[in-house]
Image 1 (spheres, rainbow, N blue to C red):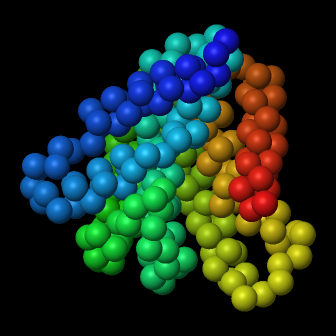
Image 2 (image 1 turned 45 degrees about the vertical axis):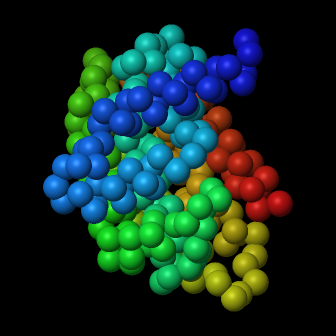
Length: 222
């Protein structure tokens, strides 16, 4: 398999699906929809949704059944970046080589754009196809927990509280497991769920997701 070609084809498929799911820029209120699209189509690698589709394939599922879940994950990831860049957080002016959302649209619109991306993620999940093992309630719970105060947000809180301090190994691991690894793990879990994976397969792919998430963050830090 040509990995480069595989990633490109999946990225294009995800981008087309995201374009269908998001409100068009000319839909009122236009400012918020422009800000959402500006952030979502900013040249990201689409790692999380690609992992979701790959996990579905690995569990003998159809990628089209995982596509809505994959798009929802990318919306959640993007919302977290928009908020992470805000002056009250990391105060970043650039991301992926261009101005961050709040530098283009202002802090208030950036906050609302992030909120809207998080909200639309659940709307997109509601369009996913449940299976005999994983109903809609399970899918929604899975993604809500990953994005909530004990996972993604927990990691961001710990990261903020560690600023200016020397974090020990346990603190760093907590940040990495929640801020980064949680969504990556959920990505592969949702892909497996879309393929109606049994408990054994789901457990194996969960372990893979956790290990990958930690490795990804360590490499990113280096």
